[in-house]
Amino acid sequence: MNVKIYVEGGGDANALRTRCRRGFRRFFESAGLTGRMPAIVACGSREDTYASFRTAVTNAAKTKTLPLLLVDSEQPVNSSVWSHLSEHDGWQKPAGTEDRQAHLMVECMESWFLADRDCLARFFGQGFKGNALPSRTDIEQIPKADVLNGLKQATRRSKTRGQYRKSEHSFELLGQLDARAVRTAAPHVDRLVSTLEAG
Image (tube, rainbow, N blue to C red; front, side, top):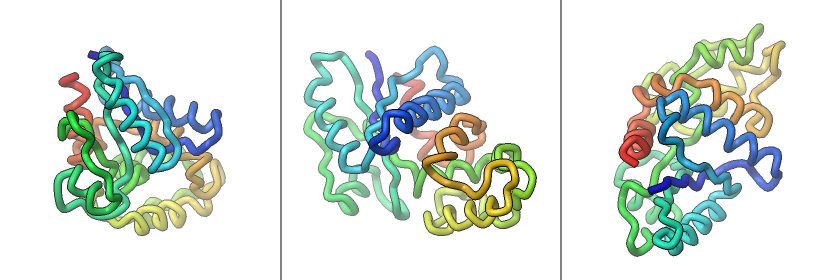
């Protein structure tokens, strides 16, 4: 069965959605999934991502595809993925889906960057200040606001790329991460990659 991941991100512009798909594809290649690469659908907004996933679920048997949902948690996760989405977004688990079909980036995709600080240093080059990043290694426990503020402070004097900007930098950075390091640091990433490995 083919796997298709419906990902939050990419906005409304085709060029940005292309960069989103490319970044995730390279990340999954880094995770060792080259032979089992999922199809990646950049859906834009959070609500659009869930809506696209729900539509895919209704057509899954016909298309012989396993749809997966991947969105930011936005907040700490203290329960199962579907319970979290129900509590914080009011989203219900569609009939016929399994727990393994919903996944979270905790608390946001940028949290993953903190697992590979060498990549950040290479990417932003001269002027990058790694000591401005949150020092914790349990990256899924760092509040989203602290992650984003840390990235801005660490990159504000970068002569190579300038200060971090999501639309300009996020997906290119994603594609350069050591996915194995991210998997080690982030239990929800490990869960996602394990699901993809199992097909």
